[in-house]
Image (cartoon, rainbow, N blue to C red; front, side, top):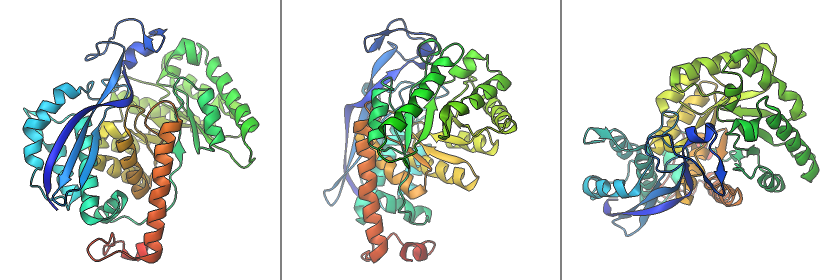
Length: 435
């Protein structure tokens, strides 16, 4: 199947671009926005509307494949690409990318995305958001060409076993960390609440007491609202390096504080994401590694999750090889093409690292659905409910897409009723798919 037409249209993401450094330095809320001036290059304000570019690819049978270029909320921070602008990107896409796509065969997803992953325009690689959107559209195009799901394209091209088990879903509360947590508990989400602890004075406390009290409230709330005593969600809280701030990144004190949180969890599993931010990759790896070793010495069950400075496949490989944490967030837009997310999940699982396929509230419904197929096919240990900060919308998109996909995969596996030319079975995985 060949590409007949390509369209690029500007749009909004489900949240905003925030200047993380300005927020962490104490920027004050003024209604929904922040007062003060931005400090990160590319920001005209501390909070800016998130922008996207939708890529629509028409196949020669008339069907349209879709993908959305999207970037993370905290763009330009932690080694990430700068703020994404639709107005500056669309002319480049019209001039340079459309002519490459039109007439191209869509049968091999991996071959196509490899080309765009390495493509340079005026000496620069495409922005990660552009590679992200292109890869989504090309994966969808491959699926439409073969009359199979996107997950089945991945299974086929990567020689993976068919997985029909739900990937645990992780909800993010945004700043509404109390009301949205209630919603998560009522809907029995697997992992909660993210909590957005990105400011020392307002959310963590100079001695960490505000975080400790929040965890105690969280445990009480789960026990109060759950209708089934067997419901025991994993607690996962993102602290954006603020714990390191209050301890001057001292690894002994940071580990002791993290271990001390265990008594506040009353037996619930606890993951702390981003306990420190060392402002560059190697110090981040070394510091997280030391914190993890200290937690082991203390006999703590608290686990740490890497995020900042762990953006690309190469970074994920390096953090994994260094045994720098218990879990890595594979932040899908930061990796560029979705194929890098797939490879990252595979690498983590092959090397004993828990793989959290994350992303950002600043994505779209299209990118979130594609990510469901990637997470299920590659066997991620956890997936973010996205997009948006309202919880319900993102959870509906991810949960329902996953349920639909799993039903199709189970049906296909049970019947092995693939028509000739559209089977996901290959010599490597045929037995697994049909057993």
